[in-house]
Image (cartoon, helix red, strand yellow):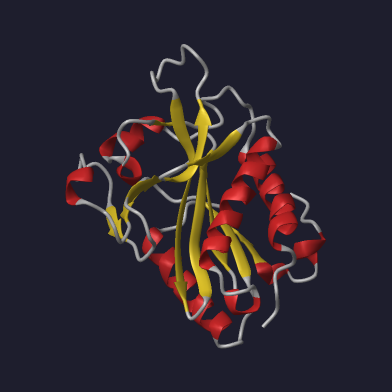
Length: 227
């Protein structure tokens, strides 16, 4: 994948994992990087990866929303939100930005994450958007879709901010096994479904999504900043 100028000048600004990354190891690496950014010892970073099948419990997770506790490993997470699923076919983007240099506005940051996802999905002809009172990015499902839901979530957002440095981030469903979401009530919402690019009959692979993510990141956030 050819990286745009945003990352060419500083390759360490983008990490791109070639295989599934263990969740505790990913969290430890994010913690270290975020601390280094806050201390002025490292530049901002975006990390694109996939995880093996697992569930994570955010700070607002409700025990009853873990429907199948033995199905996959469950990890407590310091990010906001409730239960979510990560697994193969889902692009996770962990974003470590220094909000001290970006206005110290967490609400604006989350809004920009949503806009980043919406812009990226639009590149593939998917009209996605926000929904009042619901976290994440959603799509209206085609009439007669076998899932039976009128709306479904295609991307999740969960962030943590420490010393004005962000970590955790977003996930977009490309072609995961959607049945794996059945072990939880995703983000505490049971009345709507979960979808993916493949489920919407969009043929896009992970490399194509990554290129769109990187392109649209620069439009929304500008260049990653050095320490």
